[in-house]
Length: 153
Image (cartoon, rainbow, N blue to C red; front, side):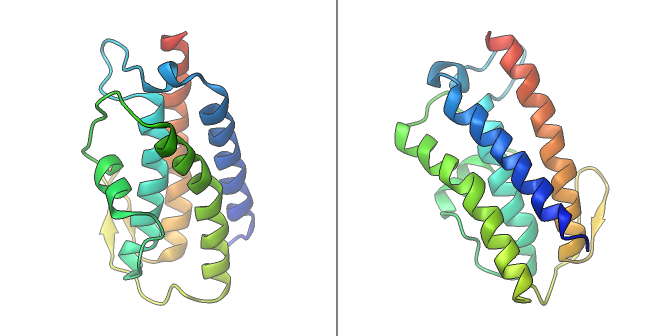
């Protein structure tokens, strides 16, 4: 696998971090008419999905709280609220989860993988597939975030 995938992912997360920390809270949490989520949900969802695809399906303990996973996993919708503490926790996890991923990958922590077919009909067979697919997934959500930013002004 190309080591550059970690750098690409980290840069993507830096971009998300800038959006999260520079966008006013009311805009982060607004769910525009015709939408079922908001900017904050999309950002937190990228963290949770990365953890599920790469850690859970590898049979490893995820590095984020179960409450975060339950609130932002696929199939959830936001209620339009978040505490300042939740927003800061998500901001911290944006970078740290990718740094941990690289460390864990480099120390060969990922030995097993439960094959999984995504809703995009892509079958992930190993950690390398999961890392590559995660970039695609996060790209989809960056697109949604850009659209949401335009909608909330």
